[in-house]
Length: 333
Ligand SMILES: NC(=O)c1ccc[n+]([C@@H]2O[C@H](COP(=O)([O-])OP(=O)(O)OC[C@H]3O[C@@H](n4cnc5c(N)ncnc54)[C@H](O)[C@@H]3O)[C@@H](O)[C@H]2O)c1
Image (cartoon, rainbow, N blue to C red; front, top):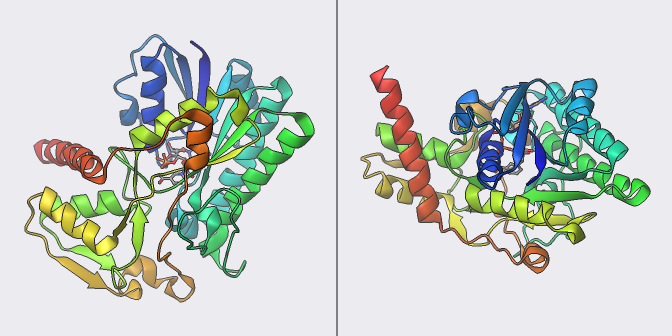
């Protein structure tokens, strides 16, 4: 049993992590400014005596220090998430993703606290080799393009974390999350699975950008959360970076078709050029979509004995059930 602070705990991944820690008897405090997270996500633990929520920002250094002082382990998940969101709000996103992380690391370093920092597979940029391992190169486009700001900010976070490990022996672990999917993920920053599911449930066309041949690997949020907890429970993971993801690939056009099948929907799957969509249109000139990004998660297995294994169909069914529930609730109200 320990006392955990989870920044971004009202978000998609954070709220699942909260539930897992509470269920094993830990005390959990969430720090979240509810910018993309929702209090609803924490409904299942809201009344639990081991749970508390503080609405505030990781940009408030004093608040971060006070909350860290009460914790034994910190999971830092708060961030402006995803390439699309950062493209739309570059300044605020950079502040959150760089200064926010710095505040958390500094406060943890003062107390030598165990801390986990959430980074992203985006740091690999355009490197499209078969299975990306933690030491593989970063391959990025022009530094002028805001398309790369998310990757750049998260890479700075990683560098900060490693510097704290090397110079202050802060027991910090960095995780690079690959596409994570499950209930509660919002579609607002362009996440493909919730968007496809919502379109299919409403019988609207599923819009697939480009030729649809680009592939993605999707990891179930419950697997991701198990990996996060396993890593913080593993002392030898301090000072290390880990990929978290599973390597089976699916073409986006096939994903769209599978969502239509599982939803028993009448929706058609439509290929559209990137610049046909208003959201992509405004920055299509500099936009590059990854053809593929496949994780090698052997290191996670070596250190923890855990490997993500939940299959895509199960994950899609979980998202469909969740989205159907939300749709029914909206129609009722
Ligand atoms: N979902 C994915 O596929 C994925 C992939 C790679 C990395 N990640 C990383 O995982 C972490 C969690 O992402 P998520 O998918 O759950 O997204 P999310 O948007 O649901 O969660 C982020 C949370 O941080 C909160 N937040 C944002 N700015 C804040 C601030 N200044 N102070 C306090 N809270 C703030 C938001 O309200 C939200 O609850 C992020 O660090 C993200 O970069 C996610």
